[in-house]
Length: 296
Image 1 (cartoon, rainbow, N blue to C red):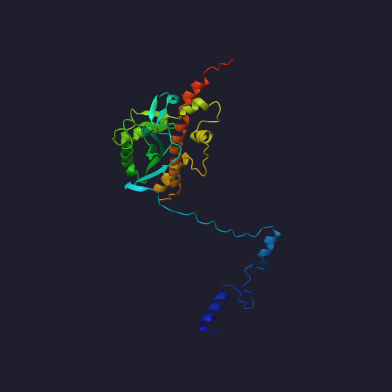
Image 2: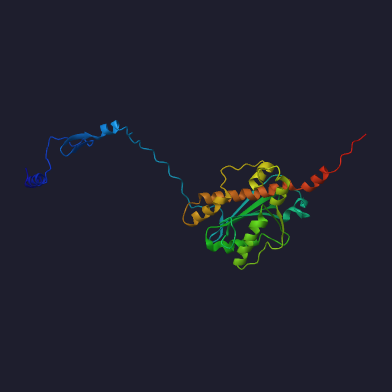
């Protein structure tokens, strides 16, 4: 035995550690207790009814991406444009159902915003604006959204170029929410409000007058399901939009922000469909109210 091994053995004996070369060293489940026989932990676990833990497979990691769709018009401002075919709308819309006169189809601008909150006020900002209009025989949907706080003014300026003095706005609850919110953001940015003074068809109010006694509610998704036979699948609720945008701004994935854009796209497409459906409501109601004369 070498001098080092002898010194280690002497130190173990001084510490009271038994050096038994014949003792098994691989039985990890056999634990010797001072002054007592070794205990089999596996046997004790079985006697106590403790089940062995089964290793669970790890869930696959969710895909992570920061990529966002659209063209970058300026730093932090993205632009998306899509075109959709379908039934050709009338050249002139009868808006008597909304207590207005008529409007040419090329003057209509269906719009909707996605915002950082639903309460409104100066602390709430629009981070996405979607707008649809009839252009060259198709429904053109344009969307603006910001990926940086500093790009809000650029978004407001770009949206203003889509509006003219002849524009007729179409929204769903836009008179009470979207239009006032944008007016506040234009004022804070020290820009003139392009929506001021324009005619505005807010479809919520005529839909509510017509169907509130028959439907469970008059939310937009109820209207599009009942009147347009549209049922959304895997739609991100509007209440989740603020979190999706803020998550992206804080370095998170863009997955839900992309879903917000898809939600906004469907909103403005449905606005155009609902307006086409509502066209002529007043004329049909007037016809239905005529007395029926029996022919003899």
